[in-house]
Image 1 (cartoon, helix red, strand yellow):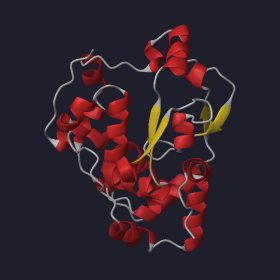
Image 2 (image 1 turned 60 degrees about the vertical axis):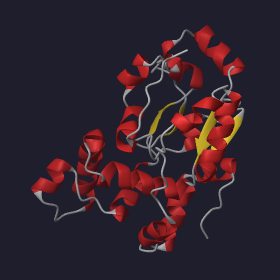
Image 3 (image 1 turned 90 degrees about the vertical axis):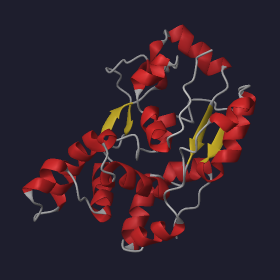
Length: 235
């Protein structure tokens, strides 16, 4: 059993989620660290769960946390993708803005998602986890996992998940997962890392500025997520 580090600070805890060195130190391994037989065994026998979120809320949250938040952890994403967006969609962008990738507007980010949705990368759960990059099977792939479709990221049609949690019922669903894993006693030690950052007012503030046709186009990118996980498509 790995010895889990107790994290009290929300910001620190959120950053540690993406710190693979830290995750390895506490004993967590990804499937790609195992042999094919070990991968198959875990997929067939382990308790498998995933958490879902309303697609458009997830897009807005990704915009806030990856392109607006001025943190070291998001610097690479903001620099790479922010620069690409500003160069393509903002003729009057300053050199300073392009250099840092900062100041991207939400409508520019939405355009970027819509115009990159048809780019493809290989995807097959077995060969992807085994790091075989020569596989010939392709599916749509957006540029970052934070706004890629959950259908592509988590492969619910290929992995028989035992439980689907939802972001809007996160605490209740997480409690169930911990109970199933025999970790119910850890509930009080888990910090509230997933505070809801996209309230209805914030959601309306951004999406009310977009044309309805653009909202529908954006929602269509996540059509499979809407169908698979029971979220309501915007009207």
